[in-house]
Image (cartoon, each protein chain N blue to C red):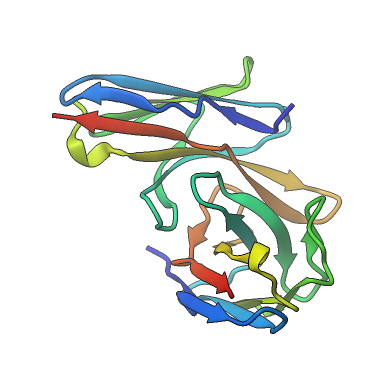
Length: 114
Length: 116
């Protein structure tokens, strides 16, 4: 089983739609969670952190469910510019090595059309 | 926000030669740097994790003698692809992170390597 799993999509939605992505992680020791956005042939950029209490940033809402080991991203009122690949990221604190390990999901592609 | 600079952004090299890619954190001390590889239409694949002053930890299937990683300072990590072959052609991205657990990682702009 992959450490972080996402539905690859693509999700094809019209402008104005609401779309939700889920991401599951296998390591219960996972400590921090983020959503990144990657545009074609570019590096990933942080979209938002994911907190246990859930957090919202404009049209974007992220939630974490530690019991079920998944995180979600909700995008409301989709824009054409939201078209990208959304990457779920989990950080593990590796006590034995004393470092953090950053694990990416494979990404979910979103295509917003007029 | 924090900036990570990766250089070069694009390189074409002959088969059999070595290529060095630099990753610098410009305004913070990156205790950990990550190196990823991404083939077209595929996800980022973690190659190795490096901590300043210690040997890198390589993911399974990544040859440490082929992909040499040096993290000599808190602001610089280098990846050297030795004896490059066409199958090494890919998009290589570095990421840098402060040691504080709940901080995000920042990415370099990526290096597109083409081996001919």
